[in-house]
Length: 468
Image (tube, rainbow, N blue to C red; front, side, top):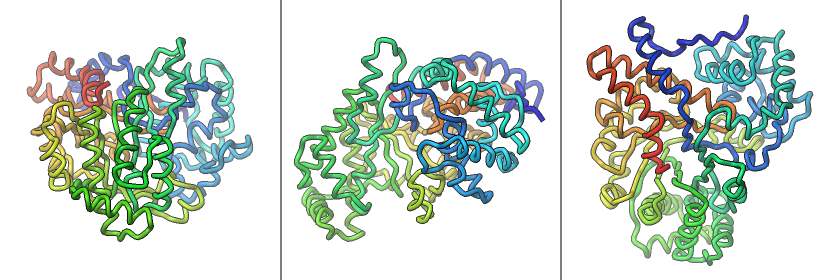
């Protein structure tokens, strides 16, 4: 069977509401993409080398794809995970595994993204199946050899205006600098400061990491004050290279302060390997509060997406590394966890805090009420396991009633899979259009307001929430 991309996919089933949703979608489908949080490597665009093969582009870097195939019994090794550049034999094997197991994606947003990529980006007409695998592979491989399918060309074709990457504080950001200085490059690719590994003394290798941080900042990090100066210096380095946000993800969102003398004592103990588990936890929570203080001073938006058990399966971590599909959600709590932070900075001029969650119960119970009071707080778009049609619809209802549309961020694609960016944003625009059409049908918005809101969700909210 061929791939069939229905023009009304994801729009409401009611014919009258669908007709308005279609018009709303048509009004925003061509607007530029703003991608304020993602994981595409800036070197991809700075170097602009041709993509290697279909599997390395569409399968192995995308843990949304690999995790479901792994659950179906496909070894990650067969999908090219953690293997570096693939031979043609290995790449074809990975592609065949995808096509052989295509039914496992039924009912998932991954199916939507992949079909959109295959059909709209590469012009593939065959639906993935065992007998079409090689034909589809050859079609994509032929396209990847064309100049119009190199990274920069696709970036322009996708209509991306701003792309934020996620970067280690010690990164010299040379790729970002090269893009900014290239007169032929007109879009914005901005770094994002991601300091998690430097804030968590319980992590293996933390002491060495903060020594590297000191070297990058040209600062002595043998004591707590030097450590703080090093973090502040690296944040300035990111701001100088265009960064607008700092990204944080820990097991919880607590921000309990420590007296300076206790922070210094725990820091020294952690460097010596003598800190207790309770002390390292207290230090990490204190440092999240310190990150908010620094955001008030340097202007970086603070984005927070807590409550994930990283690397849930140690054998997979040891063999394939992190970000390979086995990070699993935890319950999230924000109201009391963030109270110390918001007491200090919740109404501070210029401070902005974007809250993400993969615990749906937190949207209406905590995040929407916080965003509905604090001028600094924005409700982040459904993320990761929740960036799926029905979860996005639940978010729209639960958050908007309490905080309104203006306190949301617009869509965040959060992807390493470069070619899935337009598919993900297209999905969001269709769902926004359907939601707004339903509000009009219920006489809760006028049509004029719905068209204004559709454009703002795409073009205004992300710029405002992420200071773009």
